[in-house]
Image 1 (cartoon, rainbow over the protein chains, first blue to last red):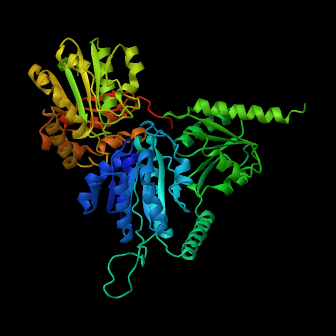
Image 2: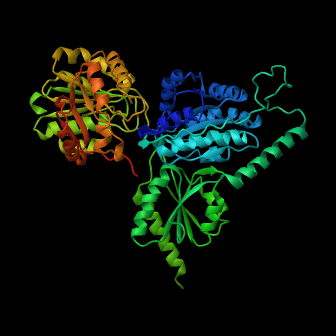
Image 3: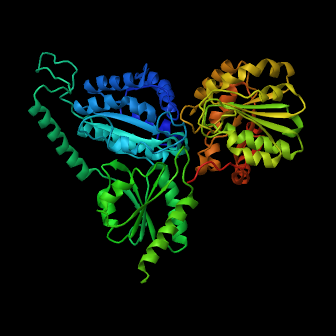
Length: 359
Length: 232
């Protein structure tokens, strides 16, 4: 399917998962990600795969645990409240070092919130996926093409590091339609000697488990896991940098917020304001180095979000508090307009200029 | 198109085929020809991009809008407004009905079908975009057409060729699928009512088609003035 097709973001995720060799999908419908399930329901039977509408989100994530234990590529998807339900399962996946792809097409919260787009699960995805010491790789697509590409990438990273990779999209990314082309990736068969798929009396039993009766053993597991996380932080952080080199102001945004921010950056550049954009593609690991580098010349940062400043602290930490971080946001299911972001940029410019002027 | 205009124009198809844009543009065309027209947003499936997003534009144009009171809100409820009955029963207004995607969307149409069939003054267009992943071939599109007809309880009367890649559409995008369109026409026995494309593409498309011999495939080109939906 290298020819371009017009797809919804949700469909692109589903098709890319199939290309990645995923033959097991478990889910439960929730707006605005239901097209993933609908697409899988149509496609999986055509290719000998398994689509199963589980009785709940909790059931679905535990089915993921089962298939992953057997060493096969597997995914589930949901939207914010449904991901909260899955959090116990996410923790168990981490505790058993099982790879999985989990998709969150975010809607407004807290609680039932609303069905319109949001990015307010940033904390949940990057810091609090569930109980216990663990991390998930969090990928933030900003186009339908990237929904597909990062799904392929997510499966590979999950297998490589034996952990959950999460696609953190929002309702707009899930619902919007754009042309997309699929390049069938070379399917690297990842060796999974730990998988539970029968010993054929040739080897000792494999055990998939997250319960440790000996405290020292549990501690050792946690330390091992964090050594792996450190390696990921070093190697896997990704971001897009746009007009960053000479920028006095850096706008930081991911997903749909980054698209809005990009047009605001263009508009501000047209007014002669030296502003750039850093778009995190991985939210964990956070692209700290790129931000720190920018802080050597930038005097002010702006976090553009569909949430109440959840990314601000990560930016501050990444730049070692070298510059103030402003917030430009909408919540409730709405998206900041390019004008709103442009206003934040001109405000930041005024503040920089005022601070420079001797009293 | 106006000379043979039926009172009710229904647009159905696979979701994402472009029904909503065509319905709005079609209503505008009827209004520009001096007809009293209302457009009905019957989509009870998709909570995001809908006819009701064009509320202000339609109001300015003097086109009635019938849609769920919950459209665009946070209420995810499969509800249709009572005003839809008026549109079907009061025969003094032209009606353009934007049916929801796939068979699930078309299911909601069933409630109004007896009246529509009784009046027998309708056209039901199957909108096809061959660049959509589940309608890549005539066979796939035909399956969806039949599913929609079964769910709705009525037959389509014509095909609309609206193959597009959103902002990356070129005349070639539509021309590339001329064989698929021909096959769909043969399989379904339905005529091709028109091709639709963004209005700036129409002259080049007309030029490219001038040389084509099978006039039945493209006798009308319908220009779309697309509704902006999202910030790039």
